[in-house]
Length: 247
Image (cartoon, rainbow, N blue to C red; front, side, top):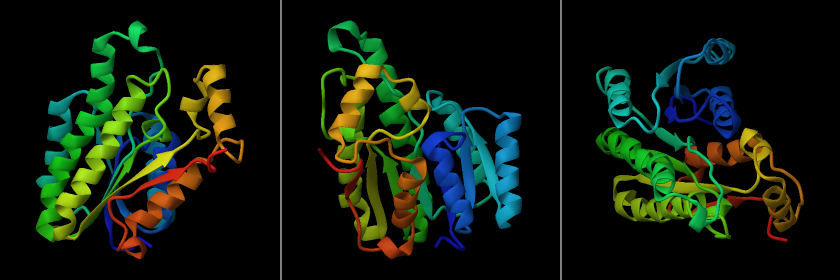
C-alpha cells in the first residue's frame, strides 16, 4: 500500500509507534524512524525490518522537549539530503493523570510542550517538503481522552483536545495543496502506557468501551496505514476513534 512512499514516524521504539513502523515496513515504505535515543535494541529492530522487507530505514534521534536537537536532526537527515516525505505520523508523546489542584502548572506546560508544541514544530518543518511536492498525508495520534474529557485530564486530555483542534485547522488550511491531515484517537491500548495506569482509571476506561477489552497496537496501526495510503484520498480533517465503541 505504500510502495514508493517515504514516511517519517515519531516514537517508533515501542508501543503503537513501533507497530506502525512494522506495518509501514511490511507495506514497502522507506522510513525515517524517530526514537528519543540510540540503543542497541532499537538498532537491531530497524536493521531486522530493513533487511526483511528490503527497504531503507533511517533513524532520527531527538528528545521532543529539545527543539534545537529536533530541528537539527530533521535538517541534517532530511533537508540536506533533499529527501521527500510523503507521510508524517506523529505518534510520540507522554501521558499524565492528576487533578488540577494537585498538578503544577509547570507539569501541564511540560505535557503541552511534548504533546502539542513539539508536534507543531515537526509538522511546520515537514510541511515545507510536502508543499513543494504538492502532496502528503499527516496522521496525528490523539486520544479518546481528548474527545471525552474526564476528571484528572487537565494536562494529557486537554493537550490531546488541543491537538485535535489543531488537526482540524491544518486540514482546512492545506487541503488546497493536496495535503490531508487526520487524527486517530485510540482508547485504551495494550502498551506500556496502559500497564503504568492507576488501576481505577484503567478499569473506568475499559468499562467505557462496548467491547470491554484493551485494543491492540496493530489495530491502531492498520487504520494509520489506511490513512497514509492513497486508498483514503478523500478523507481529510477527520478524528477517528479506535476504542471498541462506547458502552
